[in-house]
Length: 207
Ligand SMILES: Cc1cc2nc3c(=O)[nH]c(=O)nc-3n(C[C@H](O)[C@H](O)[C@H](O)COP(=O)(O)OP(=O)(O)OC[C@H]3O[C@@H](n4cnc5c(N)ncnc54)[C@H](O)[C@@H]3O)c2cc1C
Image 1: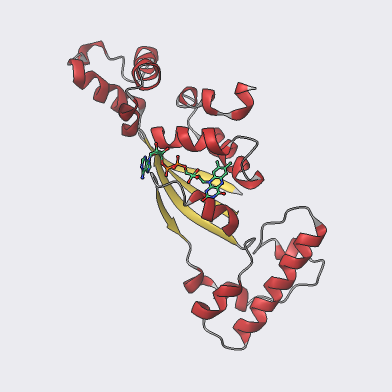
Image 2: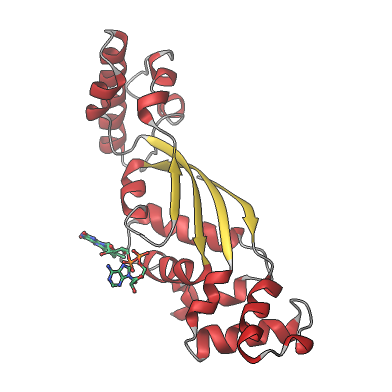
C-alpha cells in the first residue's frame, strides 16, 4: 500500500479554536511547544475532544484491498472518495491474462496475502472476471464476481478525533492484518509535530 498525506491543518488553528473559549490568543506561540501542550491538555486530558476536530487530514491511500475498504468504510466520521470499479474495470479487461503463479503480474490488481492457496484462488478469480469482461458483460454486472483482494484507492479525509479512534481500534492486534498495516502507515505519514497526539493510541506503544 502507498499513503500520501495531501493536506493537513496546522496545529495553531486548533490552538486558536481552544483559545477562543478563554480569549487567550496572546498566549499562543503559533503552533509551538506551548500550543502543543495546550492541545494535548484540553483535547486529550480534559476530554474536551471536540477541539481536536479542528485538525483535519486528507490522505491518498493506494493499493489496498476491497476487504480493507469495507472495514474502513465502517468509520462513519470520515469522508471517502473511492476509485469506482463501475468505471475502471477496463484496466483489467485490456490487460493480459495471468498465469496461475504469476503473483508479480497479478499484484497490479490484487493484494497478495502470502498464502499460496489464497493467492492462487485470487488469480483464478481475476482471470474469470477478465474473461467475463472480454465477453462483453457490462462492468455493472461483472463487478459482482470481483474477489475481495481486488485493489482499490481512495481519498480519505478525517479529523484528529476520529483518526485517534481509528488508530486505536485498527492498530490493535485483534484487527485485520491489512488494516493494522494501514493504521501504522497513516500514523507514520502524519507530520512529525502532529504524531504526539496519536502516540498513546498506537498499539505497539501501549504494550
Ligand atoms: C477488531 C474489530 C472487529 C470488528 N468486527 C466487526 C464485525 O464482526 N461486524 C461488524 O459489523 N463490525 C465489526 N467491527 C466494526 C465496528 O463495530 C465499528 O463499526 C468500526 O470499528 C467503526 O468504529 P466507530 O463506530 O467507533 O467509528 P465511527 O463510525 O467513525 O464513529 C466514531 C465515534 O463516533 C461516535 N458515533 C458514531 N456514530 C454514532 C451513533 N450512531 N451513535 C452514537 N455514537 C456514534 C462513537 O463514539 C464512535 O466511536 C469491528 C471492528 C474492530 C476494530
